[in-house]
Amino acid sequence: MRSAAWVLVAAGCAAAGCGKAGKPDPPPAAGPVRITELYTSASNIAKGEKVLLCYGVENARTVWLEPPRRELSAALARCVEVEPAATTTYTLTAEGAGGQSATRSLTLPVGPPLAKIVNVNVSSIAVKAGEPVYICYTVADARAVTIAPLGYAGGPEPKGCALDQPRKSTTYTVTATGAAGNTDQERVTVRVR
Image 1 (tube, rainbow, N blue to C red):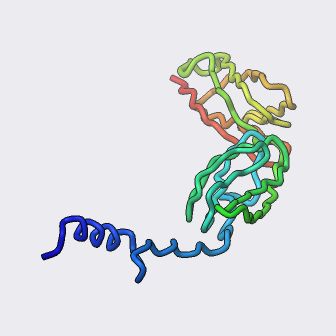
Image 2: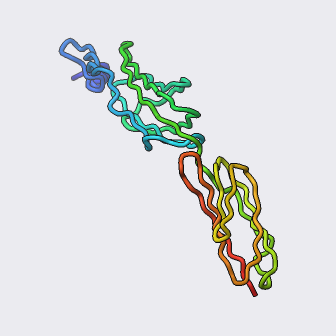
């Protein structure tokens, strides 16, 4: 009859993967550290925008991204958010348990900020024919602002107003244009009673 101790040793060896001599087998050798992928969700962005930077690593113990140095998880596929202030070269480093490492870099071009309309206000949304209406705006990062159908053309100032005396109900379109040529638009309708 087998002793209880022998049964425990046999069970422990089965769980640990013992070899013929009753000693645990060495763990399988890990492969080389590899960075399997490094890419962004956009090929270039405007200043002030965020983008996803995605990566994948194999056989890594520690992973970090710089600049600035930021510890990441060792994952087969993961994305993190970055917000570069200027064109930036990001370097991903993965290090294995034995000290071996792998690095890969990616440059993300950053262009001028996008023009944005912060708000558009009108002095009244309903007027009698010929009464004055002020169409005022606040914009950010615009090199020019237009208001149609008035033919109003403003420069890079962040605030401005235009005066109209509509004879019929009119929809005004405020357009802000950025340095890179992007546009942002907002429309407001003034009803003539």
